[in-house]
Length: 209
Image (cartoon, rainbow, N blue to C red; front, top):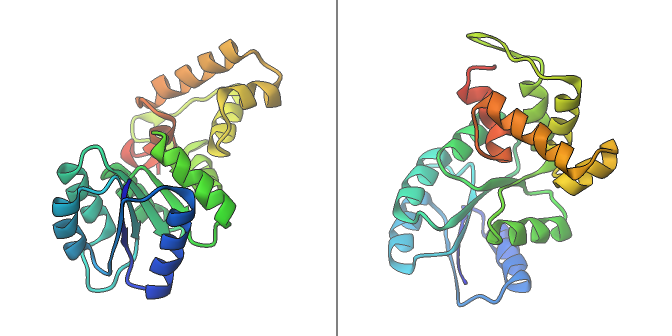
């Protein structure tokens, strides 16, 4: 696997490299301190996984980097790594093509598990970010009227925000997995999205906040 770390702090890059080396068999792991150089390097090295700090001084905004990188490398996995849980910026990055966002104070065990999930094709959000996104989504109004979720749909949405699988949700709510799948499908349909991650960020795109 080829990886690319984009962060202006040497210590942060070193820590991320250590986690990557302990979590994956790496063929190559490059480091850069700005988004412009990262794009040029990505064009040559074609990384499979890119970890990018959301706030790099004197560099392009992270969401613009995600947009350009996604266009350059459609199959790459892009994860925002930040010390700040600023939802508008995080939503912009996710909408621009990032596959997830992790906070820098995440434990090494949880960080590693999240990166492995990303490599397996899943989208990942730090649970604290997911809970805030879900909290904004439930109970807000869209420009076209009120978003109406049933009590059970709200329960399912909050558990999705916690990162629960359908099986875990069925256990927590004492429902069959088939019933949970029905609630999840209803949520995605009401929100006009195709994935759980999109459901949690739709608040901004649909004008819900």
